[in-house]
Amino acid sequence: MNFDSLLKIFVPKDHSFYPLFEKDAKCLVQASKLMIQLISTDDHDLRDPLIREIKEVELEGDRLTNQIFNQLNKSFITPFDREDIHELAANHDNVIDSMNGTSQRIKLYRPKTFMPVFLDMVKVIHLAALEIEIAINGLDSLPKSREKIMNACVKLNSLENQADDLYHHVIQVLFEQEKDAIELIKKKDILENLEKCVDKAENVSDTIKTILIKIA
Image (cartoon, rainbow, N blue to C red):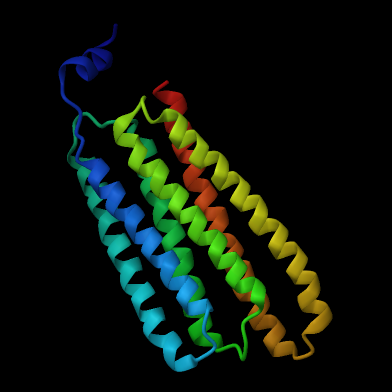
């Protein structure tokens, strides 16, 4: 047994990361709920406060991510590999950043209407956020929660496939039905960014699966 293995046995791990990840997951769910409210209205006056709220949640997510990175620099023995903690925090932050980026595009573009599929996509994002929260909250109780975490990861993969199907179908519809070239460009870019949100969520799932493999 090497020295690093002995340290892991006799030196207590730093469990302060779990509450930070759990708070970050709550931010993700909160942002996804705000996205549903945003996409559910065509009233520009109602959109702007929601966009500001999403930005505030994104800033809180940034703060928590920085806390995780700072804690990583201070911790001697971490609950799982340092690079995986870093990757999990970064990928998680990318999901909230993508939601904020999409909301900022909506503010900038001010599309005349939202396509019905926008709401379908945002609901998929919300479901993905809930599955990430389940998986994140289970990390502190491994190995007991392994099956629950894996189920959440499987669902995240399924949601990503669902978002892909929605995107590819509606892009065809958009080009067939939207006669205003400027509106077409706006809606296409918003759609692409909504789809990217789910892609980023699946990246979180991939990192969590890597963690599970390493601590099996």
